[in-house]
Length: 138
Image (cartoon, rainbow, N blue to C red):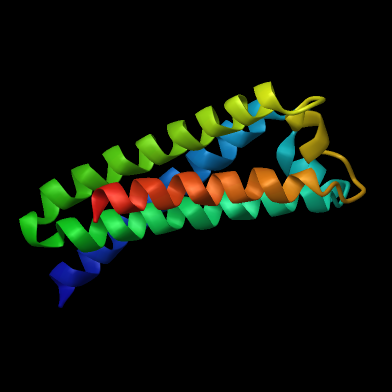
């Protein structure tokens, strides 16, 4: 029982680090402090994109743990870290690529206070990239 508790704490720790890494990556792609845009200014756009990225990365971490658990704790933890970082990187690449093919600057749009419909496209791309990574793991 204590061993399982230790595994849960380790996986949760890695998962939280991956979620934080995803938030930091999005913060780097947007002007200003993303946390201030969401909680200080009430930007729905920033919250929607951040939430989509977080859900997607959560799915990646879950799938990495679930599919690699039988390989042993150390290997499963390692693959969770690897796939989590791959997810963060690919979500960032998707954001940059989408920014290249759409008018304006996505980072600025995401930080707008008033709702911008393009935010849903950005959020969907974050989830879609995550689903692709999840499928590659499973």
